[in-house]
Length: 588
Image 1 (spheres, rainbow, N blue to C red):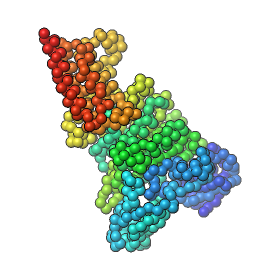
Image 2: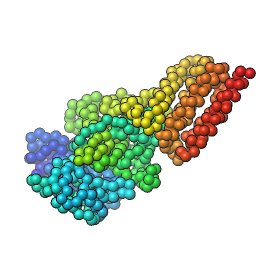
Image 3: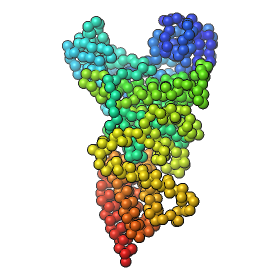
Image 4: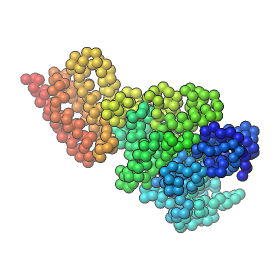
């Protein structure tokens, strides 16, 4: 290992001289405590290092040791159920060793080095194998089988493979290649800044179902897609992402709390281990990895936490799983980039952010996608990225929001005014959009109903028309509107209150299947059409609003899935009878 000395310190940025043979992004250890850092600039034998820990007390002249290895994480059984910091140190073990605050210079293995895992071979000695081939499985949790894969750029014949109990560092198989022998263990290492390669990206064709009506119906994200949730403080970004993590139709969840407030992250860390997976009724943590980097943690590690999380997501995608990654929030990550850039004395871009902010965000979101992974059977896996953005004052024109919108295809715009009216999820249906909706129309037609696409379009048009009418109402008042326009406002109110509003804390309303969403939407719009027809024949909208059928519609979202069909039959019968009664009264 090469040695050099610290010559300058500026917060988390350290300059060292006398460093020979170093490369960009090499990890170094600094001072007596061995603080972890990463080389981010080289000029001759002078290196600039960003330190992932607090540099208080560090002084010029202290020793710096180059490990000659980039920032890498260990990938293997034991990742699921774990809670890590930004550089993959297990927080539960850190707490046992150093208390409530992380001790500086602590190096703890990411995976339990002693625990034995039951390895079951799927190949036998003498089989020909190549990169990405699954040679065996480990039951990591009751929900997920961990696939042991042949490393990239390796092809040959299995010389040894044996069933048994192994720890993450032990060798389970040996591959004889034309030139050498390659040992395969239960775990491997990967550089976090290097995307794991895939064979071919696939087009988005199926939605990531979330159980949240406003998302699944109006602004769906595809499996392997990218979505952004910008919103001001208190608008519900974290709750929305927690709902996605709990209910999204994915096999593995990676939740990255990047620079969030301590109380928000505490809520995540305390509630997630107690959540139940709705499909299996097992603990949700059995298919979840948490990466926690609160706002009072060292700023450089905040930048690393995003890469740590997405590398673990790519690893499970390569096994053929559907992975969803929640990054909360990329604004805090961008702030870390800005602080490091300022200390490097780089030329600032817009609002002080580095000029390469857009490129870094694009590189992050490009790592998502549905893909055929490198494997002989051409396995398919997906990695869906959902990034929260915290624009100051809710200003979506600021650089992080704008650069995120350029590279993501779904925009869930959280609205503070909706949140203040207690409308949750507070996603503004007028400014949000999804560019995947048309791509997935065939899926909805085949798996839900051929009527789905026209129903969605009709509902959005009604909500848009309501927005236009509200401006007139503010000028002349509701009573001055013609009856047909009052009918449109009634239908739009039903869409808002009975469909778009959804309680995350109600056992039934917290999740709505795509089938129930279709039934709810169709009955609301059917009532709206019957109302419009009745108004044309002389019925006043005030009389229609008092019908019992309207009140029954508002009960659908609180009705359990197995009772919805029965309730809908009652509603449709009631609607027909009550509208007929109104028309008879008008003609008499």
